[in-house]
Length: 387
Image (cartoon, helix red, strand yellow):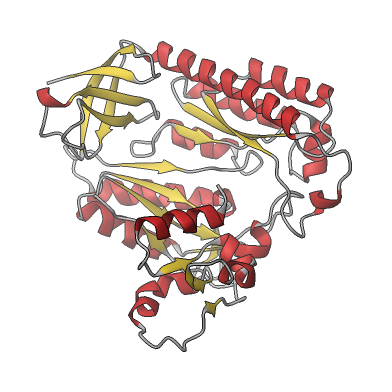
């Protein structure tokens, strides 16, 4: 969505609003963003953690742009919102140089929080009634931190430490869980998959970006794997965690993507036992290598390819959900708007689920055992509560 359009929408809702622009786009293009009509202040990724301080400054002569280029420090953060689900950032930045991506330039080098601080944040969130924590990062699997002993703590060590920590602080009758966000296929080690298959607290949920099923295009993208590795990881998960959700990201219309390359992607994905996909249409970003690549595709071709893969994703998700019908799951039910007929939530393996709200009005922000009964016309699974 166009950034200027978002600003216009905000002004339309409240023309007296104090609009602060932040995030990767603001970090990389502060001058351009500051010239958008209605933007009061531009904050970089570092300064956004002090957003309240900037809002409280009444001096209009203060700089309109506060963007630091120092992207080498890690700033831990988490969301708490309605205390149902929290997103806990444990890693930031990226050392990869994918040819289409601006993130390394806007977010800086890969850096991570330390394990003790992560455990402290997890303890705080669970004690404040959060039921599910999603571990997030720009390149989550690249988590690395040098500990006090001088040794490097890896992502695998972090997962094992969290599991052990939770076994000590969570009572048997309590329901709490941890979910992982996106992880690169080359960083999803076999020992991680095997560990998660036996975990008591980590949800059976994987999101593994593919981007293309053509090795030629993967090479042009400067991705660090070939499709054969991706297929191996998916099959590894399916063999030991049959009911796991496996999501993916695909980019269509990358410069030089021929019809044959697209067919390679289509048939490769078709045979993969994944659960669904996020489909993105390639768009150029300033100062990225792909910007100068030849053989740009027309918008009509990119749109057509996007639609084809979106339809495939819907079919895959339906098949995945259908396999789960009549099985027992645990759903985290979210806050319900009182006029909704149903209350919604997600199973541990990320199936969108609903039950009639009027029957069970007191299950907001709770983990409940259910039986999945049938899929409605919108692809949402109707469940029955197990009392």
